Structures are given as structure tokens and as C-alpha cells.
Length: 260
Image (cartoon, rainbow, N blue to C red; front, side, top):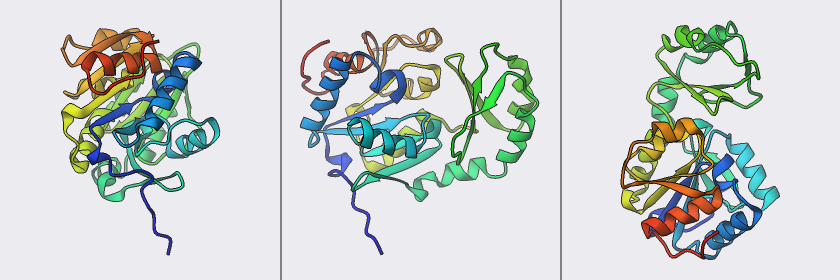
């Protein structure tokens, strides 16, 4: 039997934890800014914990870290908050069943009913993704009608439209923010040591989770409009990776390598 070993020292022992969306956020901005952020994280793995909080699935994360030199996270909240996984050496992203149990229970028996109703909604295409506890759709260029989703909402699920590009059908009450709060509580991470980062409306629940938060430069207008005024929420000028570094410095959460 293979013994799985966490890839990094326990994240609860690290004084700073970055919980970040990927597309447009951690993967956004200039090549120089991304390189600066990634190198800074790798040079400080003893003091920096990294959690990816993304709509992507675990296989995507594992492949991209291996292929493009992206820092391997300690934990992954994937599938828009419906998957919780830990990263084990040599980079295997493995779900944590005990942490996922409430998510699986909330989704139980919903997938087939949701899929059937969504087949009747014009302007949406089911994503080619290995779904576990959610369903996600791409919006066609011609768009679709929001009222057409009302029968789906009646199934006691959450429906999230983001960036005018995606529709996510999620278990009721499950999204990036609640799942992140559950994870950091389970890991014994003090909330004041965490920075969340995002750029679209599907990040709103983690950016308003009473943690330090940054909406990076270039974020979706709908996200800016939905964010409340709060001393814990930073609206960055810098785009993507540079916006993350800007917020870390603004909140004085960890020494940074400079500005971009």
C-alpha cells in the first residue's frame, strides 16, 4: 500500500496563507509579475501556504503545475468550491473525503434532475469536465435568458452566473467562500493570516468571507459592483499576479519582493 505524504510542511504552521483563484488572478497579469510572485512563493515555502480556489478540476491543476512551472499548492478547493483536495508528493492532488462529506450529501440525487432541466435551456453548453459535485455550462456568444434557469433553482441548488461566460450549478450553500472557511478551520489556520484573491463573480463568496481579500486589477465589473466597502477588501490597481502582491503589501501580511 502506497503511503501518501503531504508535499509541504503543515500549512497551519505557516504565518501567511494565500487562497487564490487561478484564471485571471494567479495566472493573470504580465509574465514578469507572474514570475516574481511564483519565485517569491517558492523561495518562502516555509512561511507561505498556498491554496488554489478555482472553478477548475484537480486534474487540470496537477497538469498545469507539472507543465508550466506553477507553484504546487498545499491544498486545492476546486470545482467552484465543491472539491477539497490535499497535494501529496510528488504532486498528486487527492480529494479529502471527510472534508467533502457535507458537499457530497448536499449534492446527492441532484445531478440527473439538474442535467435534464438544463437540456431545455438554450444558449448553454455543458462543459467537457469530469464533474463530481456540480455541473457547469459555457454561455454561447448569443447569450441565454436568465428566467429559463428558474426551474433549476427550484431543485434546491445554487445557480451562479459569472463573467457572462459560465453558469455553475452547485449544491445549496456550497461555494468557494464557505468551503474555504471550512478548510482553514479544519487546518487550524487563523483567519487573520489568510488573503483571498479573485477576479470574477464566482469569487464573491470568498472575497466577502470576513478574511483579507483582493479583487485584482481587471476584475469583472459585476464583481466590483457586488463587493461591499470594507477595510478587509482591497481593490487592486495592478492586474493579476501583481495585484496579489500589491494587496499583500497593503495589508502587511508578509514581506514582498517589490511592486509591478
